[in-house]
Length: 284
Image (tube, rainbow, N blue to C red):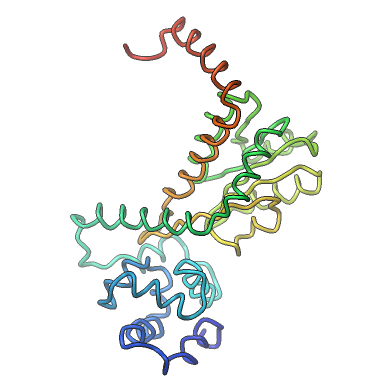
């Protein structure tokens, strides 16, 4: 484990570290099985330094940010942790539930800030253009990522009328059988990634379809099959992922689409309002 690049960087740069950075380095080495699964805020709390100090420590080691360093720390363990192991390693017996709301929302805020800093506006605009130009849009999202997929499907299909979330993993082959280079596949996957998501993206790429991937890291197994990739930070001090940033990206895609195609969307919404009134959809 200590032969990996991340620990070599720590050891090689130890003499140049400030007192606070040395405290972080010592903690990471001493707790190499648990520390990789802590958020920046939780690590800072355990080491008794400021969260900003933890983030600066990652940059000091020439990583792109804390999530980048954290992923390298996790990979140094050589295997993925099960959900039960992650829960056990990120939860202390003395953790109080009264602090959870501030802790989790703070992590969500940090994830959104990190995501904002790493999303290239030109790449985002390209993603919006591909959504607009696509003849058909298929969304691939399984397990917890289905929540984001459903959100995207609802609004994209509401205004474009060409979007489908493939809900049944076993029936995916029938849905993408006649996929073409005019179609767009949006793949969503976060650690731990499902095999089926990777397999479907690989297949549709072979068929010539365009692909847009929303995932949590450049080392995600979905990235090699992405024409366009949007990276969203999902780190949280729990066995679950924080979906605040991926949902924000999804909201931004929908909003950008409606602004770009505002006349078409406005006409569509006016027609829908009449239909909703007819069927008395909303509470008055």
